[in-house]
Length: 501
Ligand code: NAD
Image: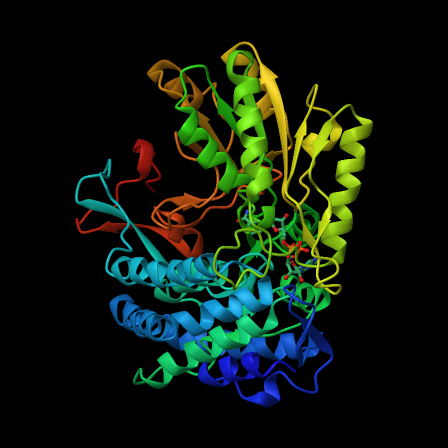
């Protein structure tokens, strides 16, 4: 096992027993080196964890919300103190370049700050009653146990988006992280426990971590005492999870796949557009849910834009993401590389002209899967373009009218992120209007990827419809009650109904 990883895990407070001798083999996508063997939970372990989480909830829900916020504040302090180490572990385990690993931990810190402020703002409305001497109001009250399923590509930030809000909302959490990134989860849990140790009177089991594959997740999904399942991952996973939660009338927050497009109009600042598209398409080796997978460019600027993109694409430095200067790290595993090759073969068969896409660094890193970012000039939006391939592939398409561009952008089954580059205010407003982009995120002169935590994050259609992080996304983690209080000496019935004996 890599001693560097052991040092990092020690510094982050993870005992070696947690990542040795287990059945879940962890390998770094950077070079294929073994990083650990983590213990997997069973379905029975999950059921016991839910019972503990529910017992903790019964106490935590009665702690005043601003006091709950204090725990999240302490956790944010631990994250600040350990940011560099946790970020390096994210790079090692998920293959992110250093600044993106750091950015991921920064996002955790930011959502903690947001949640601390939120802990004093969980307010409902006061509503005018139609009856004299009556008052109506609504309250948001703690919901219960929140089950969090997360994907490999944001191995820790997505958990923080959920848990920071859930904890200030008075809920308790159980985390089933991706089986590809259990070490970052162990480290995050250890930092959370440090915060708990500094917080007087915290009930045990406010947040628990259970590593393992889909079967452990399913035990959580099916458990009637898990009030909310917040699941981030592929649409395939959402299709399995959504109906199971619905069958027991549980609440579900789904954050699934994206197939995000950028429209570039004749008035666009092409320098900005090239920068936005390059990072969006190839940053994180194309492994973000908000990755730019399609460019829809006006025919008058299409060739210039696409030629510039192609030239810049070929210059992106591929290599060890922890070495300065490299911008494109590895794909998570061989299956991801194979899926990329299959998509490129399909694109060729459907009339696409492919640049790039080959395997890189195979001699230096035979156990790792680096790919040259690909750009595919497509004659039309064929089937493969409508499919999310989780790899650095950018399809380019031409349009003539803005209506046609928006129709192409909305034609795919996914609905997460979208953007337009334009200097024409009419085009920008049309893109954001009711007849514009159908995505949860619609940006102007900024790319599709890299959302800030202040906004609600999520998308429509096969992306699942959930919203997390900022704005009023916290409401998903609470139950709403409507209260009517009669302070008169009469009992008038609503709508003037008479029921007198
Ligand atoms: P994945 O669907 O393979 O796995 C995601 C998680 O779901 C893992 O923890 C996995 O163990 C679990 N899981 C899978 N099947 C399950 C089941 N039947 N029951 C319970 N849990 C189950 O996804 P991945 O490869 O880790 O991540 C990539 C995908 O995630 C892409 O499609 C990407 O777009 C999506 N993603 C979406 C968002 C978003 O916010 N919309 C964010 C990150 C990633």
